[in-house]
Length: 310
View 1 (cartoon, one colour):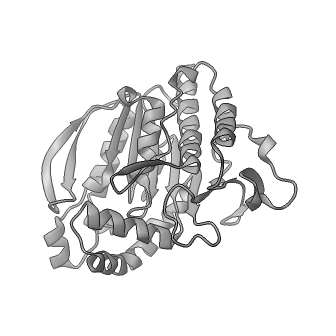
View 2 (view 1 turned 120 degrees about the vertical axis):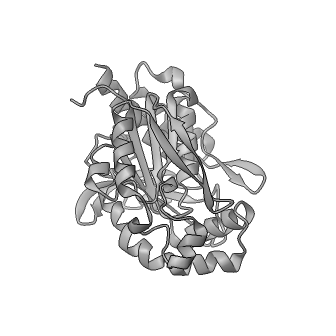
């Protein structure tokens, strides 16, 4: 049994894979007063101008203080405060460091949080976000042009320059995740980037998942149902695939929410119905596949907390 202390959730993925969107919903479920949420992309060695001069990308471990990142994650696990660096994406430079005191739950998101074994071993739950690549590019263009002051051409050039480092350093972390989240477009909806996206979750046996057996599809047509589970292999290992269709109606989504919450006896007072939110320009919209993904990840975080409480 692990010693008592904060529960650590790691969320890793390439740039604009949806890490912040996923973590915000999980924070709502767990309760913002009980969650510390940090981004370890702040541990860059160089500012934007220096990276350009050195011809190095932020995805490269040599561009980051990996040793300090390791040390701070381990301190947070022990319930100790840290003085975290702050990288300002708007200016491309560093702001004053921030004093962080860990709460009951610590969400750590970033590009390289699973890069070393010392970091991986600290997390109670590890999630890797692996959206359809064309979808991730669309998300990155929208985010960086509307929030970070880049032109479309500059974003596409940055993606091109980062491709090799993404292949070498970011994508290999997928293999260490307990849950892999893959959002993808339905057939015939090539322009969809939001609430109608399908989700496929790879549920690895490295953690105990809730019993969702009533969603097992024996027909062999898992993709046609709103919610279904199928057995298969991922990276050569046996896994469960949870399929959530973008057209899932609210009542079906809430039925699955009920099943998951039934596994969390004594914690139903935390139930929050404003999950699955994402920003589409200035509008806030709802995605049921996103909401169910956030809830399932939260289930594992709360389950780990229950273990330490015993």
